[in-house]
Image (cartoon, rainbow, N blue to C red; front, side, top):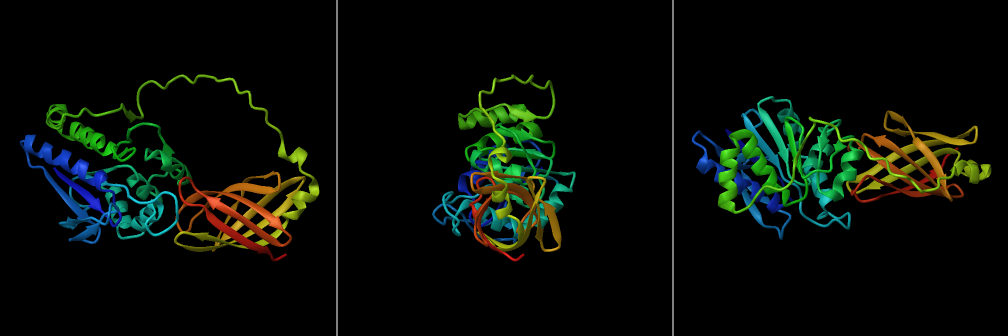
Length: 334
C-alpha cells in the first residue's frame, strides 16, 4: 500500500506532518509493504509551508496511477485579509497549479482513496471535484463548500466512499487513524493510538443507517415581504443594463448585469463571457439589492451579491463563504 501526502506552497505543517507520523507508525506494525512519501505536483523540490516559511522536502511527483491513499492538507496563513499570505488565496493558488489536473485524474482512479485535512477539501471543491459530494472542512470554510455545490456535513470526519475529509487542523490525527483502521484494520489503528497515547475523536459520518428524525422548533421570527414595503420607484432605480467589474483576490472579473421590473418584482440575468445565468431570488432590503448566482470564473462558485445604486453607478460586493469579499463597481449603460 502506498500513501502520498501532497504538499503545495503555503501548506499547513500540522495538516501534513501529523498524518505523516501516524502512517509512518502504522508502517512499523503492518507486515506487508507500506510506504509513506511527501510529494508535490511539480516533483522533487523544497516546498515552503505557510508556517514561518519552513521548508519541507518533497521526494517526488504525485503519482495518480499508483494504488493507495492520497492526502491533501490545508493551508496556513491569515484569514482576515486578501493578501498573498491569506489562506483563501493560498488554497486558490494551489487549485490552479498542476495539482488540479492530477486530482481530477486521481478521483477517476478506482484504486485511489482521496483524503483531505482542514482546507484540503476546499482545494478539491475549488477544482470542481466535490459537487454533490458530502464533505467537511474547517468551520470557517463551510460556506465555501456550499458555494461550490458540495454538501457540507457537521462532523469531524466524513467518509463519502472514495473521498474522506476532515475538519479543522487537529483532525489530521483523526483522519489518519481512521484511514489506518479502514485500510489496515482496527488492531493496527489501536496499536498506533497506544503508541501516541491518543484516541481518535468523533464519530465518522457515513451516508448509511437510520436517518435522524427532524426535531421541529418553533420559529418566533416575524417575516415581512420586502416587496410590500419598497416603493415601485425604488425598484425602477435598479433597472437597466449594468457594466460591472468584480475585483477578486486573483483578478478582475467583468460581468454584464441586466435588471428589469416585472410585475413589481426585480428579475435579471448576468453575462460572464459567453455564459448567461439568471439571478437567483433578487430581493430589495432597504436600499440594497441582494441576490445569488453561479459563476464559472475564476472558479465555479455560487456568490452572494449585495449592491446599491447612486444615480448611474452601482457599488457593492460579492462573497462566497469565508473567501474574502470581492468589490463590485459598475455603471448603467442603458
